[in-house]
Image (cartoon, rainbow, N blue to C red; front, side, top):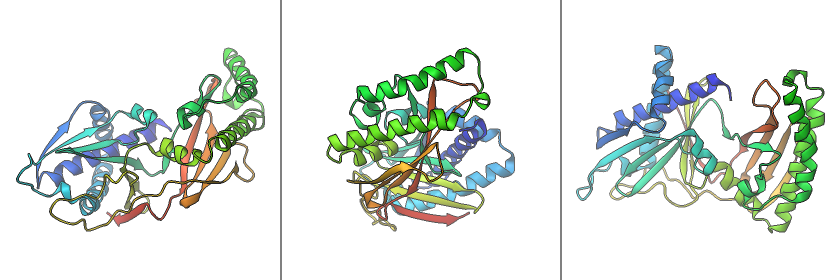
Length: 317
């Protein structure tokens, strides 16, 4: 992801924090935790032109109204409670350990998490390298020696190119000679693990890509001037109330149990498509993360489709 995209994403996170503080303070005392990722998001927001700040904030405010329809606990005043809410912006690196949430809303013994996205639906930017065991990290099962032996010469070639100071634009036929064979090895290893693990891989894959916590994903669709809110609800921790029923009902999201298709995208050397049952599908595009050749490559992983059991709400701003 480019520096500009990172900056826009952080700015939109701050806009959401600001909108939450403004809307929720009508009902309860709101405390903003200014540790962790707060300062980076604040600086990103302040670096934007005033008109863009207003657009981000307008989008976030509409998103908060949707959230209040789903989560009446945020606006309910309960006599036995402190009626206090804490907003916390998380550090980016937590996504690496199974938490994709950017903003946490704490109140009483509850916590609601939000993943904030600006104009995109990427879910993960994982790496592949010679020494990184993606099987253990993604699926809880170590990769085979055959996989290690297959990818070793590919990354050794990249190591040699790095020593020469080579740029990716000068690397000969990188898609056919590096990307494609690496993805082929990756695909075969995933299929091998899936066969040995008796169809546990589909569920583990989704849990790795989307995290282990229930959350709402808020997406700014800038061109359409709309805010999208998606509810990923696996553990029954969302949509709760004490006094008032939610205006919008969030069903439990269904995890996949079978792999239907996993192969290269047609006419592509750098992208795999993964189709699972229950309506899940992903694209996994491998790419270089910098202009200079490095002995590691990065995935850009996106959702192509989600189940009907994932509630989706869209509102204009």
